Length: 187
Image (tube, rainbow, N blue to C red; front, side, top):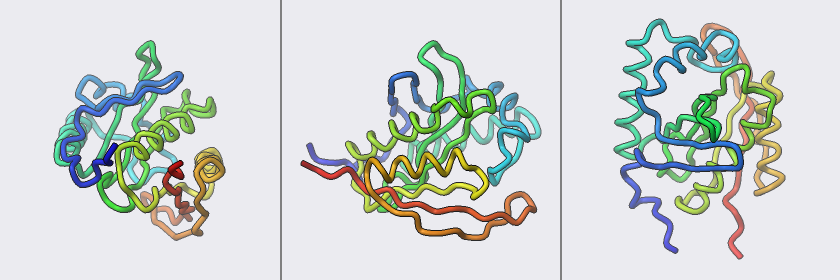
């Protein structure tokens, strides 16, 4: 099967399933979930903090849908198989040579293996559908669970820890760890 790296343009209908999760295109159906769950605790290590109001969330969703349609960003709503909203995940610049993971889980969903499961599912999809040099995974150096996700991916696919880079996250100087995850070895 030929990979579709340059052929994929419209990513707005991508759905991925794993053992416990369904990753489906972001939509306005999730606006209240995002607004309610995207709080200070859940966004501690993210460059963007809580949304001020539902209008800002709706603008974010509309922009994400447009980016998916033109292939520049893959934003997926993460739910359990019975429909409970858990967060958002995807790939920034999915059709580039170096797509970058994005991941946010609501606080109650953290620490249950959902992060690894959804990143693994996206990695498998990317290996089947995209042509890339490596996937980039960035995590705040203090977000130990997020760093462990990258380490497990490296154990599975190969890759390496690149190092730490300074970032200013909402006015706070922090260090971000950068990892490269290699494509699956073809047999």
